[in-house]
Image (cartoon, rainbow, N blue to C red; front, side, top):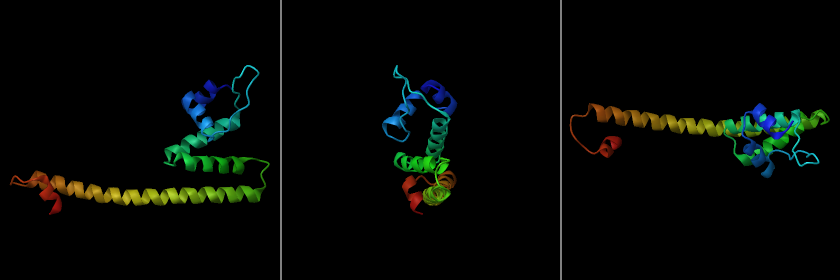
Amino acid sequence: MRIGELAAQAQVNIQTIRFYERRRVLDAPPRTAGGYRIYGARDLENLIFIRQAQELGFSLREITKLARMHRAASTPATPSESRFREQRQMAQFARARLEDLDHKLRAMRTMRLRLASLIDKLETTTTVRCPGHAMRE
């Protein structure tokens, strides 16, 4: 398939595919004699994996490592020991991302409570004071 078809099936922009290739997140495909990129089902699978990793908040650097591991783990010729090792490494990356998200969620819950408290104080106060005083109380 050509780049336009790949982009449509993966639900990404053509420029996104070219960007991933330039950054070596996605392997560069073979080209026809006329210079057209030719992609296969595996490229589609890799592109969908990359997009999903991005949606989960992984950085481009992390996605590059994850994509390499994913390709190695999903290659039928890869020995099962290597696939298992790659999957474990991917799980470690995911666990680190999950811990980061948990930390951010705790911080956001604290911020939410403080903001709700500020709003409550501002809406129920009868005296006119600087909102900064309400935050410190």
